[in-house]
Image (tube, rainbow, N blue to C red):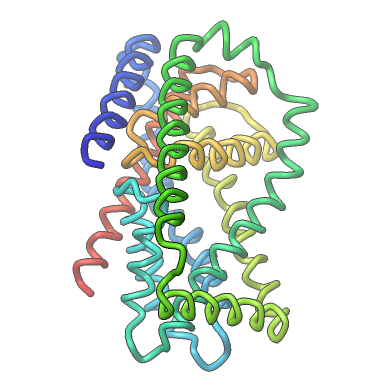
Length: 312
């Protein structure tokens, strides 16, 4: 697994350096200087997204088991930081949240709250993406811009995606093979899974309002990402509309999901933003700088998350 991490980091680094050379170090530095004090707003505004996402997680708990909001906020930031820095397909952070909730809450309730939060967050993402992506596909996408302006960078990114897909297929086949050799799962594990499944089904039936509120707050969290995209573009002197900012954010979320195995999004953050900006008819240079700024924000908050993780 460590060798694969090095491979992902190497490919991502090559992609980053290639695009940096193509865009011009001087041009990128000049664009970064335009942001100036705006870095303070860009870094600090993320707390709003965390507040909204924490509310989404809070409403995934059954009444009577909901921890204090401040504690949930710290765990949310800690889990996201762990997910960001480790190639765990976002599982490491979820497990960390489950364990750090403590034994005062039953394990089944802790697990079901985390799984329910992932479910409602996925629904919220789907609601946002389905409408925005349809609009983008019909009106905004310009694939020729990607081909002509960032062709080589896109090929490097595509190569990284191909590696990820191959590894995922191998892992799936390996899991199927292991499952066939162990035809009877352990009784305790099977019972725990059935109890978790039952808890989730009961939650949706018994607490539909909490379920809807969880989806609602996660949806607002995704919308806030569009706010961040708008302000980063504003400080870069890139004139975009609110709808374009939402398009950038939605495409970013989808692309981040494709490259979720890459630790700390090395290279992929800048490469995907370059491709997204080009596809929307915007400057690839601005897209690369946009990705670099967001990367700095993500790393900063990931470090805050690790601090909360160590302080537990």
